[in-house]
Length: 281
Image 1: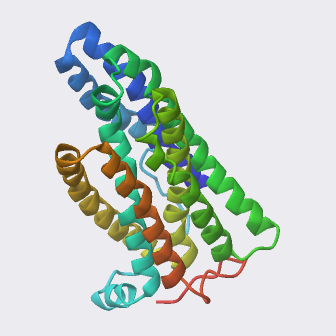
Image 2: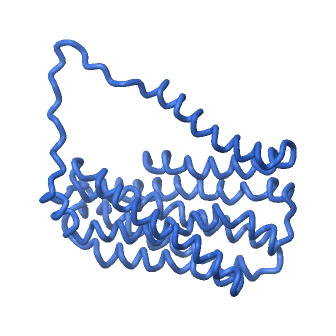
């Protein structure tokens, strides 16, 4: 659930942005909207410094053991694990789905559904609330299955498999006549994506010892960022040459490949027991 809470921040931010940015652009101009978005990052920095001050070591407190050094040998071992590549491939094939909806949903609603900027502001925030619900649903359901005795990896995999079903709703979203049915199906797709994402972000801590969790997570983030960049450019070409329907089909089927990678590359062994045992590096 902790992962669900912090991962839900992007969904909350997307919902707030969909409400605020069009209104700011209409009232004060697009330059102000851009400036407002940029300044939010500085506001977050101030808040972070206030709530997370530097840790001061009290006198007489025993010095903690330094983290294990990330040696070349450790990285080679980590890259040789199938589980590492399951996590990297999984995120690389699901994160682009999120960025597809974040970047292209307002444009799609305008180009294909005829939404004005005011109408986008009224409705475009709803799918992000659905994603927020998906974060908590994925985290809660997997935790509930584990508490009832199911192995950790089995619970994570069940959520990944089941969450692929609502993600497929993005495919008919591009073909239905009613714009409101289209939005409802997009909400369902983002609900499924967010449930899968919560599992994807939890897997490194399920499978690896603490000293390499950040490295595995960072590596998966690198892969996800690179593929998302290419995918965003590809979507533009698909929309120009074909239609949004093709883009929705690709976004709906990519998570199936991600789930297949998780199922095939993460098998028995570390992290499969309800105790959450981790593999050694």
